[in-house]
Length: 75
Image 1: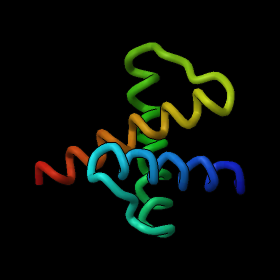
Image 2 (image 1 turned 90 degrees about the horizontal axis):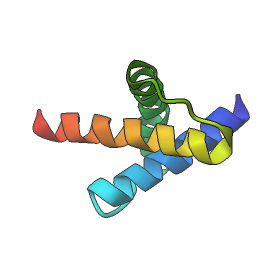
Image 3 (image 1 turned 180 degrees about the horizontal axis):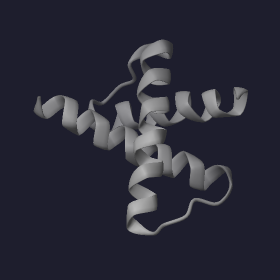
């Protein structure tokens, strides 16, 4: 559970940096990263990809968080 939160925080910060140019603070990064990891997992499953290891999990969560931020920005 703790590892999931750490990956979520890092993925949220990374997505915030890529999309917005900066993070959203600890809580904001955590929320974006955790929700993004669910979205990323769903997208990876649909596309037939598999995430292996810590780097794979971070990439998957970051992709999902970027998709989340793009959707939020469009709305």
